[in-house]
Every structure is written in structure tokens, then in C-alpha cells.
Length: 227
Ligand SMILES: C[S@@+](CC[C@H](N)C(=O)[O-])C[C@H]1O[C@@H](n2cnc3c(N)ncnc32)[C@H](O)[C@@H]1O
Picture 1 (tube, protein in one colour):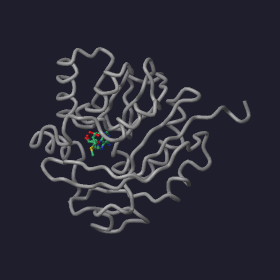
Picture 2: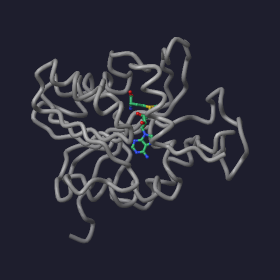
Picture 3: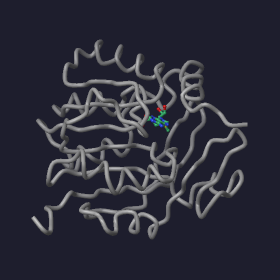
């Protein structure tokens, strides 16, 4: 049975609250530590949930627009951002397949997405990589992603739809990536991969501890080769 994505995530957040804890993710900490994003820059986060990474970036002086499909998570994030008195963080409800008109025309120094693109439609992932990232980013801007790995213990669960893509019993798709998939995605774009690392994160999801293998991708927008 096909699940409505918004209902699924609203239900998950309504039942479990701060599913991934309130600390920032490994990827967000690693991003700030390596100064991939810096104070004064402006970043778009895709699938930002209740804003644990956005809040962390905002506290580090980075202006953030965070987008998530779940209205429940977005409201939780807005409350948390108000509580922390952060005016440089905007949390918006929206689907990454059709980005909101309220940010149309805005440019960013970075696009950040922690464990969300594996949930997108496969063609949309390609569109984001080939089109939207280039569209949103200023020259020299970076996209920083964590992507599910084919080494994930959940790899192969459900029905195989295509190479490294599986449909779960509830109809949700999950895309897993190997190194060559990622290189191919960025292959003919103006986004040059600066760093591609396989990493592990000890996560607590609701109350289950999980050592998640994943890819960290950092790619930078290059100048127009013809321009
Ligand atoms: C695994 S969670 C990660 C949340 C957040 N990035 C974090 O690190 O806490 C995936 C998030 O993607 C959001 N999401 C799923 N599909 C989406 C879509 N099509 N558009 C926007 N957000 C989506 C979910 O609501 C959920 O918050």
C-alpha cells in the first residue's frame, strides 16, 4: 500500500517527537569543523526536520532556510528556533520535489541535506544534482550531503525496483548509493566533487542505537567553462 509521504512523516514526528535527538548530526558538525560553511553565509537545508542542524548552523552565524515536508516537524523547529531567539533561521514546510515560491529567486552559498535525498524520487535526485543545486548556488557555493550506503544493514529490504533502489512494504522508496553512483551523478555537471568519504555515525533513532554507514559528499560549483 502506497503511503502518503507527508502523513508518514507527520505521524512519525507526532508519535516520537525529537526522533534523532536535539544534538546536530555528524555531518553538520563535520561541516562547521571543516569550515565548509562559514559565518555570514546563507544555506538552504533540504529535509531539515525539526531543525537540529539548522539551529546549530544558525548559532554558528550562518543564515539558514530549512525545508521539510512535515508540518509537525516544521512547527517543532519554529518553536525551538524562537526559544533560542534565532532570527537567522527560517523553517518552511514544503516538498523538495517542488520547492516553495517563497524562496524563488534566492541564491545560496550552500545546500545541505542530511539523510533526505535517499527518500526522493530517483529522477528528482538527478534533477537536483544536475539542475537545482546549480540553480540555487552562487559560484563557489557548496552542496554537502549524506547519502545512504549500499553497506547499510537495510540494503536489500523490500522489493528491488532498480539498481540500489528498493520499495518497502508501505510503498516508500529508498535509494542506496555506491561510489560509482555518486561520481556518475555529478559527472557532467558544474559541481566538482571536493570530498567523497565513506563514514559511520552512531545514531539513536527514537530509542534504537544504530551504527549507520553513509556517504559524505562535498561538491563545489565551478565557473561556467564557456563563460
Ligand atoms: C531521516 S529524516 C532526517 C531529518 C534531518 N535531516 C535530520 O538530520 O534531523 C528525513 C527528513 O526528510 C523529510 N522528508 C522526506 N521526504 C521529503 C520531501 N519529499 N520533501 C521534504 N522533506 C522530506 C522528512 O520529513 C524527515 O524530516
